[in-house]
Image 1 (spheres, helix red, strand yellow):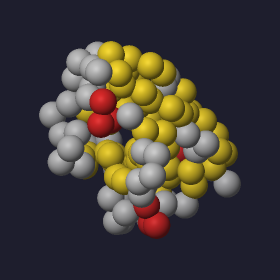
Image 2 (cartoon, one colour; image 1 turned 60 degrees about the vertical axis):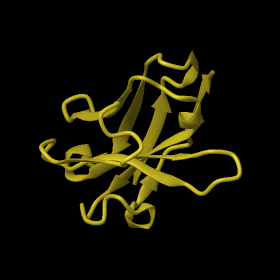
Image 3 (spheres, helix red, strand yellow; image 1 turned 90 degrees about the vertical axis):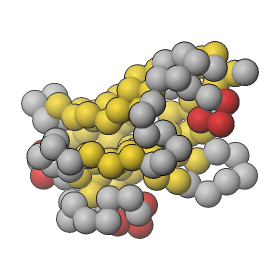
Length: 124
């Protein structure tokens, strides 16, 4: 089992920044690819970003590329999502997730464990 706890969400004005954190406990964190997903009201969950276990390969949704940065610190069992130039359409509940196989990292169904989510609200 892997337990994931997100933090860092909140209310920010358009153009502002937030950094989300996801602390993991349980099985060896460094063995997992980690991803961030989000779900806005009335919409399906969508992929945001992912990082493989080596920390070298990162993946981004088109909507966030160039504005968001995913990183991980295996020594601290934590994955981060730095979000800059936020837009009202970034408003959603953000979830981190762990993927043991490390494949299909843009697909939510490939992930084994999920956090409870943290709300991000961007005002215009």
